[in-house]
Length: 598
View 1 (cartoon, one colour):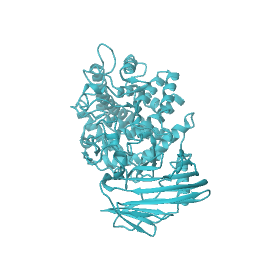
View 2 (tube, rainbow, N blue to C red):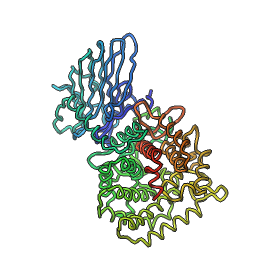
View 3 (cartoon, rainbow, N blue to C red):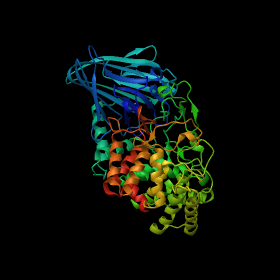
């Protein structure tokens, strides 16, 4: 039976990430990087698809478990209280190494607590059972070009089905340590780490990074946890920012809306930059800008909505038929066909992010401006065409209002870049395109009877993405059409205080209906209320959203009242929205207010 998504915590090292449950099971781990194949895939299947468990062997009772991240870090501490005593497990992935390592340390606190470790990797997303051999350090798992080395301070037994097991007891003041390291099978095993040294270095490294944050508001704990989560989702070698470290966690249990999010979306990454820039992290923004230049290089019409972490382009989607899916939610998809879609809003997001980056002191790069001009040249020819939109609709393309609004943002920020930073470009043409888009949206994208903005031209439906209209400055917050749009979203898309993206029953996306509330949209509503000077209501909604985080402060993509957090986890988009809403509530300016004033 699948564990609740909220039961998991995140570990990461800037190369890859894993999910560890409250009871000490690592059920998801992709190596050697975020978008590689998983060697622990029980999250999307069962034990036969690979897991790594470490926990007390409770005798004569049950264990009471409490966990938290070590303050200012991504080091997870889980305390187990059993009838035999008390012990703590410290889980982390060491920073600043080129190996994908998981380190697990068991500290005895009281009494004598029996423990069991089971390491059962299955390469190729849970399909391939490795060859297991013991060595002087513990055990080694081999399959094709991949290998995992399990180092242990206790005796490891090797079982015939590729499972390594250890049973041991820790008393007060005693410690046992384990580390699991990936390496290519034709290369020598990575060096054996000293667990105490790695723990101290990793703790210091995380805290040194967090000390750079400029946020000191009343929601500091939630904001800092979100910033740490976002940093964990940045691929260190390139600066690419992934949407989530998981794939095919469903938007509805038993449903088919199961997507692979282990890639770098231009749209998601630019929202992430707003959070990082406004919290003082210019270096991360600059690294992403450089990743973008490498990834997008080429002709404007070749720009994709998403890329792999190294900037490569091909992300073909297919079904991993041997996996049963999280809570029997199938298909289990690897890859994402949205890479080949036309999504016009990404041009606005990229242009806006570059503009804000320059305002925050991001170093000027001539190639970056040349790239922006090339993107705009393509957008001048394409903005009038239908597209798949922000929600990546898999039905026929349409004239989505949000896409048009973001095309307007692209030209608007280009004009302002020339005016403010004295850059060169065909500003007259850009002004004309900006004005033409604005006029067309107000002519075709406003419901004639209700006076509110619609999801697409000619449709009476609303879309939560329209909450971004005042945030990006297309119309001011006090414009009657904006206020009527907010009032139209409330009854149509808000249930139990949470915002759903759009009405999935209409067939607009070509999929079976049903999904959870989309958490970023819920934060966008908070922003609109705050910009409307409805501060008390905005604050109540924001604090209610904070209550949806799991016990270690993480958010998924969506939330459903019946099951809790749902969808890929943790989701960068949700944590970005949290940070930006907190900034806006704190100062009534922040990232969202900053965009609106532009």
